[in-house]
Length: 506
Image (cartoon, rainbow, N blue to C red; front, side, top):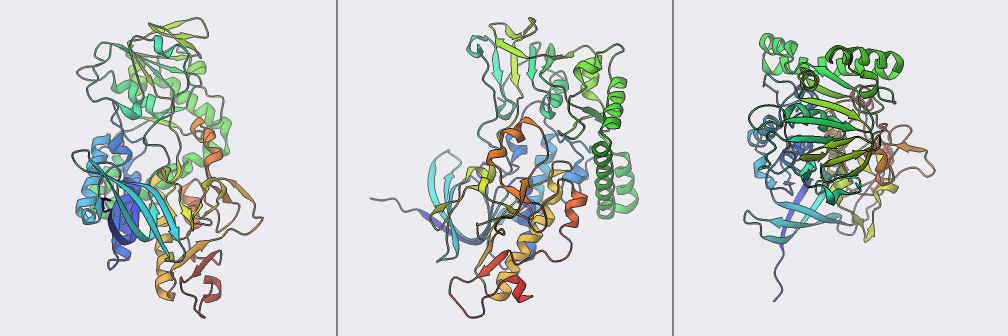
């Protein structure tokens, strides 16, 4: 006997209950309280990245006053906050705004198929219950918003290291950190020089169960800068102006401060190099080889700058519990890592903080009327709507500003599209890129994970409405005024004489 597959229907489905998905869901619920919205999350709890990553020291690398929601003040003293505080903030948001009613945990979307005849999406979902049992489910939706992040949750990026099986200790990737790992007193080598490595190094030397020594092994240096963990200006603004206005003023202050810093460093890269080198040298022991270990070959903000709260990364080096080695790996050995310089780094634990695997739409490959959508062949309308894909929006954030600052504007675009359909009796909103339009890359970072993914990423146009910027201040200007353009073709599943595009309607 065939098992009956459960079916659920909704006007709007948001895929992913991380910071972005929950933020978008809140805006959509506010805009359409009469519509049925479902929030589908593959994991057993909300939080996305902040529920997945549990490595030592996991924290934000930007102020949560800006990283958090515009509608829910961040009231903790710490501006650079630990992962557990951010998880609590996300869970509190779900409870406070009643999103738990829409939330479906353990719901992993595996396929999405659009039917123009029915003007709806059919989502294939694998449901995992609290006991780990799996079943299949179908969710039908008129509009889908994917807040699935930009990387593969199942597997991080790890290069092939010769001799890996020879190593007698533990080899770990931060994306899947075991809760019961005991590294107390051990020699740890962290391969990598990005934000994860800079975060883990001081954390593994702190508190009970601290490592004996931690080495950060990097092939190429990164820019690392110290910033205060407690934002005293934010604390003053919250105290004087109250939670709501004080938080809003703090966000404005942070947005313009960060925009100014990034703009100066990008426009004057030589000045930026000298400034960052000077700041780094002051944090390190006298005589430290700054130019070998902290002078990257690229200009500031060609890759993201790594921030460390109150200089904890540099303090660990000054105290002697940590060091930095800049070299290339020849192979793994029984005792550690053989370097191309001939030196051997002995280790008990090796952490491969070697980056992420970028993945669009949570690994879902949509089909439109039976034809698979190749996302890399598509162009994004305002960095959110996918050309050739009806009734679907996605969340992409910034590379030179806090990622989540884009939530409100992207949600606003989806809301405008849905309102236009409701007002004119349309069922379908299809973004169609002009034939022969010039396109360019979405992101402007030279980081390895971005470069590895270029062939898999959608593209953007060189002008509105097919353009986005990588900083909030510039991108926010693109969302002023009318958001809908005749490149979005509205129609109904039933032919009617009143059909017309947005431009004709206006």
